[in-house]
Length: 164
Image 1 (cartoon, rainbow, N blue to C red):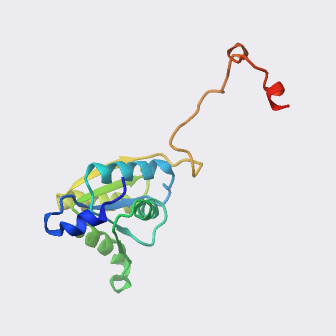
Image 2 (image 1 turned 135 degrees about the horizontal axis):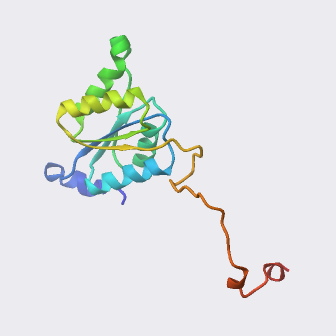
Image 3 (image 1 turned 90 degrees about the vertical axis):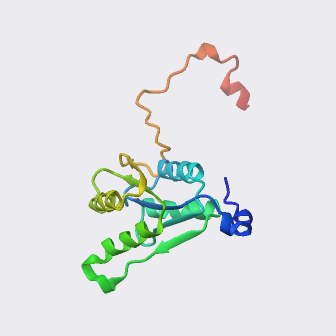
């Protein structure tokens, strides 16, 4: 799954794949986010990941994915020259650089909602997913609702005897 940088730069003019932008809520940073990003960049044959530098959450996970799998990473910073418009300007610049956009939303974040509107107006292809905020940072998205039970008859040994 690692990015094939030798192949990409050897065939720079023939490079197939796309630059993938990642936006999302600051409240989402568990393994589910990494799985979504990883699956999409593999499916799209991504050649670069583009995201915002400052926010925690989804953007931070995108940076970790780039590092983990050696993907080129393009970071965009807030430019305070635009004052209150800094966030919108940064998002517009990222969208302009991207061929495809991934949006991972907690369903509440105004920033991610606004980015989705900008992406829709751009006409570019995107993947939008809403995830519930997990109370654990390492949840892998599994919700265990029932108590674990087991039938002692399934075991053909005594755990206490094995330990001694």
